[in-house]
Image (cartoon, rainbow, N blue to C red; front, top):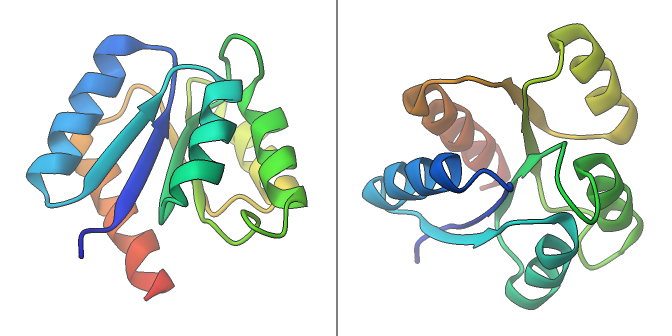
Length: 124
C-alpha cells in the first residue's frame, strides 16, 4: 500500500509541484492550505508523513506541531517542515519541538523527495 503524505502549505503552486512529484514517485498525497484544515486532515486520514509550512493563515506551522505532538493519536507521525526561515533559527526550533527534519525554501523537488524517502524508510 502506498504511503500517505499530507502537505500543509498555503502556496498553491508549491503544493501542486510537490503533489505531482510525490504522486509520480508512488505516494498517496493529500493537501491542506492552512493549519486548521491540516489538523483536521491529520486526524481524519492518519498520514504516514506530514510536510508542513511555518507561515500560514489561521494557524502557523509551529502551533500545528504543538497540537499534533500533544495528541496521543498523532504524536508519532513524522513531520518535515519546509520554510523560508533562516536555517539556524529553523533548526533550533525544530529540535525544540521534536520535528523529524526540515527543508529550507526554495528547494529542489528531488531534495524534498530524498528527505521524504529517508524519513519514511526510518519509519518502516
